[in-house]
Length: 313
Length: 262
Image 1 (cartoon, one colour):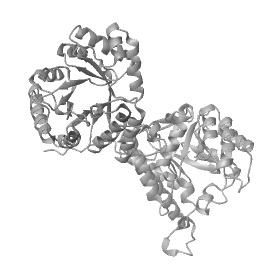
Image 2 (tube, rainbow over the protein chains, first blue to last red):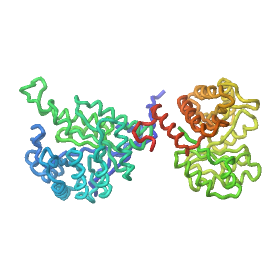
Image 3 (cartoon, rainbow over the protein chains, first blue to last red):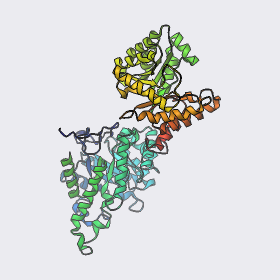
């Protein structure tokens, strides 16, 4: 008797979403099975990895990853072009860190200008991220959405405290939107409901259940992502079917394991390898949990993750 | 849970008048309202429909499906009318549901029609004699109907077993027997048999202001026992809210503060 692979069938389907424009536009989602189980269903689109850049020099990034961009990171346009031309990035995620009141507190107008400059310099899709300051993001992302009008960007992150203004801006300028909640699947669902009740199509949403680094709560993120997928696929819960974002880089590159010098912890081995491995392992875990879009920093870890995706597909 | 909207019934004056005058609007509106409220099937109860039954059922099916893109539950004791309804039914949105067969030989024709049109069918666990006394008797009747269905070529997954809900105000002990039957029916086959009830029977005869409460609480208990479908009023918001809340408790819906709005 020949072996028959047991197959699960699902009622629901992850929504697919495109961002960017022209032949460089990216598409994520659309699968009707769990991650990489292509023998069980259709997985029309591969997960996409976006290179994270920011609108001011990355002084707070550990040297290992900061050095990778030392010649380009003084200017977001140069940095974006470097990712596009030299690193073969499929997408770029521009984080408007300098707008944070505790950083440079730069204005929404400044941010808008940066975005226009970056968009004019690259032909790959752009993700525009605020500084994760509830009030400031509401102002900055509204200006950003307008500056990027017509570019079909992903903007974010809309959170419980500021989603109304950001949703309205994404709606007005035809962007895709990241809805973020803090590691709570019920609040993730609630935020998606509230956003769609404003008339924003669920087909334009991306869920960010909040990321975390290996060793720093990764299992919580993993479990929330997995449960979101199961609710969307098994229970056909339409509010839980948007693609999932894993904003990996910013959570990995702030922990001691990626920055403690070899002289302090010789038993941990090469600081460079450590950081790359940490980001790659965290990102790969997110992929297995159901992430459709990753934001990462180190070119080497991105290379490893892209290779993994290619091999699993 | 599968909701079968019960509002289009010959018993309702407005519906009866629209049926008699072949005025599609009130019927379409009622079908649309139930569909929008979450009904998966729309029950079409034309009663015995002895005169012009076939023509009436055909007209009902076509009028409703012209507006509402959902399968219908065809509810008549007249087999010719039922067959006309099955012929007219647009299966694009799912196969129709026949309401109903039982262990009464006069109702076996419904099984024949279910096989012929590949329809789903509700099987009332009653026979030619009196009403079933308890859950065990209901199961015995269910087993007989299942055997009969096999003879006619109706797959078991197309059958919804109905324990026959009786009114609590006169036959209080039957409420518990029916609940037990819902649980036992599922054990008659693997995969489990599907089950259905005519919910509002439970509150027949009780004062009107108490009917909603009685329906809600009983539905919750039935769902806990694994009920697959209910013929009920999807326009009763409190009933729908009780159902959604039970789905949350049963882990069938992911909780969010706005779950009642979904």
